Image (cartoon, rainbow, N blue to C red; front, side, top):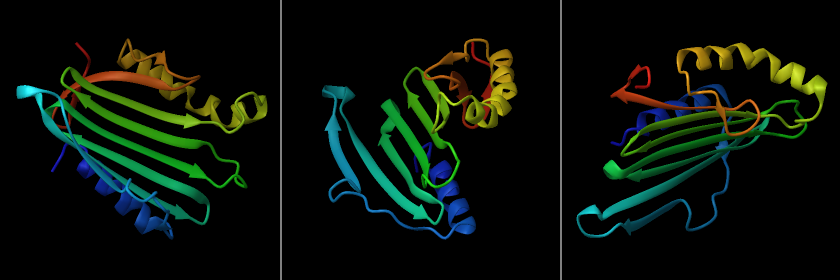
Length: 163
């Protein structure tokens, strides 16, 4: 089992328990792909698997899991609501490289320039962003407007402050 498999399994199980999930088509040949990367003693097999679901209010729930041994572990998880609903997109990226772990959580608003929409979705999460910035002083690097990005050092599942 890889580092992020338990997160993927838990997310899918939670969604299956709470939503009427139906399969969302993954293009043929992309359900699972494997490749040998690197050279010499750094050569390793990388396996990418994709999962797709949909629900009555969610037009696409997609996960991509990259298993590349000690060199690379990635879980990308996104949820796109149907456009009829006033909801933001959600994304989570868990990435492990030889130098550490990267975690990005993303709530992408549908209407970025609408002040009413921003007041409804962005303003309520600003205290969380501020807390992250205080707890992890370099975490306030924003990849997009109001998207926290942090590099965390941890052993197993016990988080600690960055060094």
